[in-house]
View (tube, rainbow over the protein chains, first blue to last red):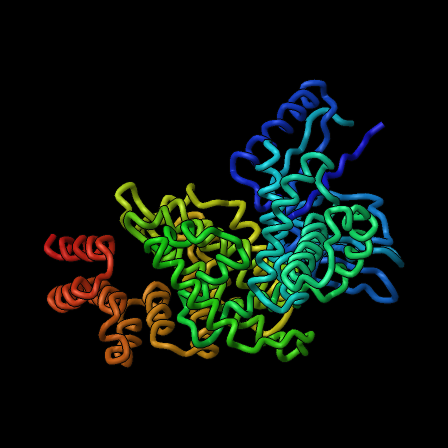
Length: 120
Length: 412
């Protein structure tokens, strides 16, 4: 079985972290991901750019494009895609193609990405 | 991380929202700041024991408000005090408060807090100092060292600025759309000034002033989170990120300015560039270009060129053309001339400088650019005159050193 682990935190607080704190945090996670990679069970890992870069495609009668992160707390996160795109516009086109009749797709650029090792 | 360190980061992040809400509640900046300080002290006692609250800003607002009310009652000696027990029911009260915070009011709270720092009567540096003290929560000594003045002088400036602010009448009602847009524009200009205070520094003080750039970016991001579809706020954030991305390459080991063409582009921060480029694209979708978007577009062209020869000077030339329409100024035309010299040749650029001779007679860069264009056209004697003029106007040793290099190259 594959599991997806989602990272949540207060963005403004993470921005206020010192460089040492940030480095310590990344080093700690690195230890875990290296172990998982060695065991051949690490899938793709991505760090997302700040929510200020987000654009949301909301499906309704017609698809709406909203500038900002997904914010409806009454809906739940149900899935995710990593896609290579030439531009934000390209990513929005993909999201529009993926959109159903309801729900929303939040497009977030990825700032760091590791493809992972071993999952099939 | 120690308790103090993580509480420090949480409190710093929550500060603008918390002080802004307390200001709306008490309508007095001193009371609001004291209330926030008191709440921070209580957080230091409470959070290590009870763990961090789900929403630190809501906790600080709630506790700060209660402690300030207690303090006001104590001063009025009207009734006996409820002690800390009064806030024992914090969890419940916090959740109702959080609901209210989710409403749009706090966006305008934070905007108001930033806006009152931008009193038009105050000189720009005082506006910036005030915002750093009140919104960012930097200490007076931190601000003083960033501005290269003594702590006493900075304390005096801030006190004076606060007095001017107290005399002004800022409406506490929710602003209408026009007023909100005006406030945003004023605050954005202040954030850009703050960034430039750090960015334009060179020589020995450059390193000290870098935190000003980082603080400006933090404020821009804060504004952008509050107003995510404001094209000019998106663009301003992009502009700051794209310029700041070059920070490590802008000065050499002797703190001399390294020109864009000579910068080691491997030192550019690619993460900041990527974020800046996405934001430019996002802003472009929204509306007619504003001045920050056009400037961000220009920075984006530079940031996208892996080597100087890849730079799309024609696009930069065009963008400066747009900027000339939106915000006509001799300095913008001067910048356009630099781009035009690359895109269309030095003769065209030199012709563009002619109408600038009077307005920019005392401007270092005008004479520097003129000298460089004349040099390129092989008019060495005239170039030397322009360079000498530039040296007499240089404000820093690094600027003068750069021109001297140019003069030396004339005699080769």
